[in-house]
Length: 450
Image 1 (cartoon, rainbow, N blue to C red):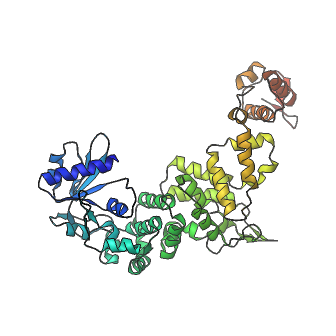
Image 2 (spheres, rainbow, N blue to C red; image 1 turned 180 degrees about the vertical axis):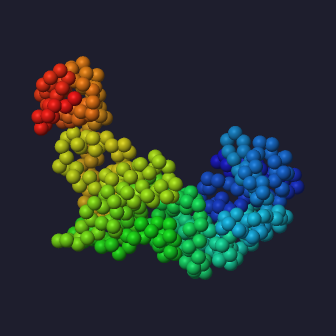
Image 3 (cartoon, helix red, strand yellow; image 1 turned 60 degrees about the horizontal axis):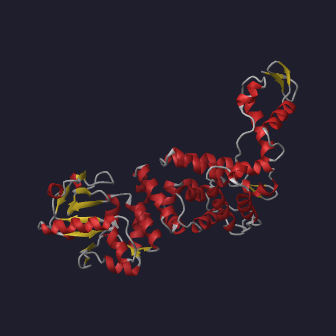
C-alpha cells in the first residue's frame, strides 16, 4: 500500500537525520488487530520546520499543533511532532501546545489507550505507555488517564468512543462509559459537521446497531437525534411487526447493513422516523401519514447535520418510497416500469429487503421486483418517446402546462404496450385531447384550455 510505503520512507529519513520516529495511533491499532490500515500517521521529535526542510514537498496542515502533511505522487502521510497540550478552552483544541522530546508525553495527551501505541516499523516493536495492548486483548475502549478530563478537552471524543466500540466490537470500559453518561450533554457544543461525520462512520463502518445502542445507553442519542430516540416504546401492530416497537425494528435494520452506502444506511435509520408523531389507535395501531412526516423530519435532521443537498434528496426519496413496495403486485404496467426506473432503485430495493427482514420477513414484493428488473431491459423501462412537445406543436396544439399531461398519457400507453409508433401516439393524443378550435382543446369537464 502506497501510504504504508511512504510512512516507512518518512520514518527512515527522519531516523537517518538523527530523530526519533514511529508509526502511531489507529494504524498501529489496526495492524495489531490483524487489519489493513488505510491511513498511516507518524510521530517524531523533529519540529515542524525541520520536517518541512527534510521533505520539500510537505505542506503545513497544523503547524501550531506540530502537524505536517508529507506527500509524494502516490500517497500522503501526516507527521506530527511529539507534544503535550495546555488547557483546552473550546472543547476541541488546546489553547497552546508544548513540543516534546519524550514520546510518552505525546501518548498521554491522546484519547484512548488503543490509539496510544507507537510502533517501530523496522522491528515491529511497540512502545506502550498506557496498557493499550492489554486493552486490545481485553477488547475494551478506555480513555487515557481521567476520562472526564479527556472528554472535557475534546467533546467529539464522546462520539469517537462509541464509534470505536461499535466498529471493533469492543466494550466501553465502565469508568469511561460512566464519564460519557455524566457529560453527554457536552456533545451539544460539537460542530454539526463533526457530529455528521462520526454518525456517518458509525452507520457505515460496521456495527451500526451496536453503535446506536451505545448512543442510546450513553444519553448521546437523545441529544443529537431526539427524533430517533422518540422511536423507543412506540408500539406497532403485531400482525405486521412481530419484532416489537419502532426502535427495535430500526435496530434490526441497522444490524442487517453490510458495507452500505451512506444514503442507504441513513434510509434504514430514518425510514420510520415519522411514526412517533403519527401514532394512534383506532381499530388497530395506525401511523397515518407517517411517510410524509418521515420525509419532513428527514429533511430537518439531515439539514441540521449539514449533509449535502444530494444526500438529503436521496434519503428523502428512500423514506418517501419505502411503503410503495407493498403495492407492487397490483401496479399498472406503466406505474411499475416508472417505479423500477427510479433513480438509485437498487438502494430502494435493498431498503425494502432490510425492512421486511426486520418485520414479517415476507419477500414476495422484493422477489417480484428483482424478477421484473431482469425481465425488462432498460429500453423497455425508459423507451425513447414516441411523441414530443415539438410533435404536438406541429399537430396544432398550443404549448402550455397541459403538454406534461398529454406526454405522460402517451408514455403510459407506450409503457403498457398499447402503442408502438409515433403515428399511434399522435392518434391517441387526438382521441384523448381533441382540439375543438385552432390550438385549443377541451379538458375533461368540457371547458376550453389554451
